[in-house]
Length: 82
Image (cartoon, rainbow, N blue to C red):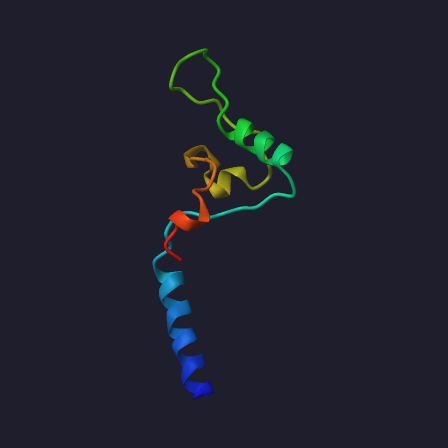
C-alpha cells in the first residue's frame, strides 16, 4: 500500500512539473511587507492610467521575466480549489 502511494505521488509530481500553472502563492511575515511588495509590482509612472512601471530589479529579474508578472492579493483560501 505504501509503495503504491509513493508511486502515485511520484507520477503526480511529474505531471505538475510538465504542466506548470504559471502562478504562485507567496506569504510574508506581516501586512506591511505585503503592501510594499504589492506596491513595487504595481507602480504606475503616470497618474490615473493603466500603464505599469518596472518593479525594483534584482540579479534574477531578467531570467524570471518579472515584467510579465501580475501581482495581486491572493483570493480567500475558501475560494481556491486545492
